[in-house]
Length: 436
Image: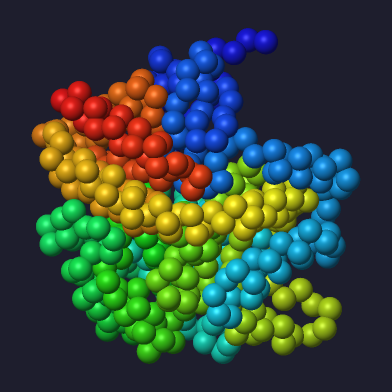
């Protein structure tokens, strides 16, 4: 069959550059990919922040195949299948506090859209229909649907679509105070006062008009921007003060990335809604989940018996194969104690990442859990070029990294060994010595 690469319009990709020199994976196992030429490439980004348990897990593949043979599809509207309810129960048991209700989606973007809609509908059900304003954060990433783009703060994602962004959206300042927090090991010391920016927006718009604030506890796609100590706690207190719902976007931090089930668990700050995806199925089948507090869910359950409570959903919500993949992934996380393993590896990872300090072009290094970032000095007049050069050079040396702007992001699978961490850092160091 003809395969000239032209038909596939690739997402978030420099298509012309890629197709001139394709980088194609053929298989994967453990912490490595294998290219179509047979070359091994270490996965330094868990696929795309999603393959927490590593690649090639037979338990997940077998569970998916078994589900597809037994019940290939079950309609999610007015019908159900046992695995969806089992999965929801297990997720609720993992979640902190009162996040006991799960609404299934197919991606992080859909999870965000769902959470925003639930927040708006909740206030209406609760007699506060005037709460329609949504607050995001500069440099935030919440997917690429219109709701997520609107509350997101990634300029490149927004600029072509700005005339059609949701009305009534404003943004908090971002938390990346690099000058005050250079080479942070863990949460930065400075910046808790940035949470007070919510008070400014409340004074500007009137807090009674604000439905929800959505933030990533740790912002991954913007380049691993860490929450200052006390920041999330203060944001939670301000939302409580003004009757505003707090949404945590945990599409990246969910399922062990910080050495705990969720970032909310790690930080001890409980949101009203929480979005997840990615590692929910270890990246094998698209799936997302929105965790909802009891008080929000219960507000919808007061209408006439037999009536639909929320007019929202997707044809592929909680498909049989997605549920099978997620249940198998949860089994692996628990059986192999991968969340605990991530916590145990975090100090070693921290010292390894920070050992790069002093290499050419490095502006900053930061880390939390099994996530790290190396921020590079940009080339004058050529933003992003240095990081892209590092990405390409790393790939040629057998390492896959992620770049955003002039930042290199790292998040290896939770199964990585210390010797492999050393190899990853050594390779990246040699790349930084090589590039201009």
